[in-house]
Length: 145
Ligand SMILES: Nc1ncnc2c1ncn2[C@@H]1O[C@H](COP(=O)(O)OP(=O)(O)OP(=O)(O)O)[C@@H](O)[C@H]1O
Ligand SMILES: [Mg+2]
Image (cartoon, rainbow, N blue to C red; front, top):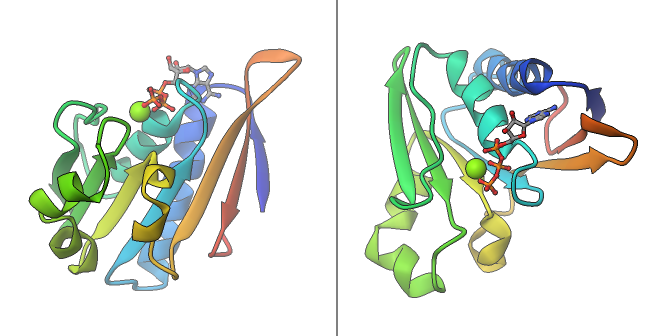
């Protein structure tokens, strides 16, 4: 499925729609692999995703690797793997325990450690659209919205 959006708010709305869908499907756990270049809108999408569950101040966890939100009875782990240096770093933060728990993991730069992306991951790919500064194409694979 591909969505063309034209601003931050529309990107957030797609993130929220994905969260709504996981809720409707009553998914206990999910791994969402976010793909796309720096500044394309992965954190904006995540903000929309988290907003479905409740209020939260969603910021890029670049320096902390993972942020945890608890809202609406759901746990959400928001990872940014941009700065990790191989799988040792992930082992040391207990990545597997996070990802395998009953929670939603939404992961920026998951392609840094492709071997750590579960087979049942949902993939969200965001890319810029040449002719418009704030237009983006968002492709969602692994679930039908
Ligand atoms: N359609 C759009 N969707 C999302 N963000 C947009 C859009 N148009 C413009 N922007 C701007 O692009 C930037 C996206 O920033 P964001 O932090 O979400 O990127 P990111 O992909 O998480 O980057 P990084 O890889 O550095 O973490 C914001 O400044 C946002 O205002
Ligand atoms: Mg980000």
